[in-house]
Length: 316
Image (cartoon, rainbow, N blue to C red):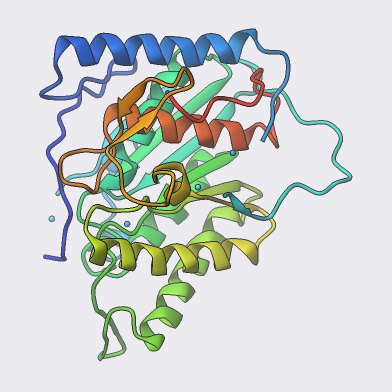
């Protein structure tokens, strides 16, 4: 088994419901109010603005299930924003409609779980947006022998043909890699080159059909060592994104750090009220943290599609 930062999740995967285990009534009410506020803002505003094995044949048919407008799939066990900006010559953006919806594919390790759920909840209220979420705990790009993400990417890109892809890895990638029988020690220069190659390969697979990719960098962690590792991987994501016009890097570190760039569990929302955005493990996002990240992704998507939102708030 690979190294794994894992937490327990419990979801009901119907087309209209997403339930998290161990959530108190007050938290649920707060989350509903916050999601409602985000959706209302999306509908009322006038215009948009910018914001981780088995080999390939082992991809299970069940993984490919999509229930429009929302398909949530948790695969079984076994943001200063940088990157390419839209060309300055682009003066109009397509507006998704129910007849031609914006198809979104969200994928990654457990770090992206809450963000994917938040984006899916949003899509439930927007008929012009359809979301498929792929979450695989303990996975990443370092261990294709455990789970082959490039294989799943190729399958889903061909079958779903999404317009926008949201990706987040790194929670389980701080480990050695093996290439042609050679062990690459984590975070050495050889490791960085190979990890960068794998990140770039994933980006190329995702953008091959004209899709736009939003690659989320990891947030600052409570553990200084995990923060150091995350910072190294973020630099690789940012560099590879900068080489590709169709990839936008989302700076999760800045979005979830305190005033001095430090780890914090609480961050203010748009009204200045402190909100708990990090789980007790000091790694994952809370449900409200997922809302915060999703809002930033939607803000960035507004550069390319008319989503009916104006400078979406980056706090829930």
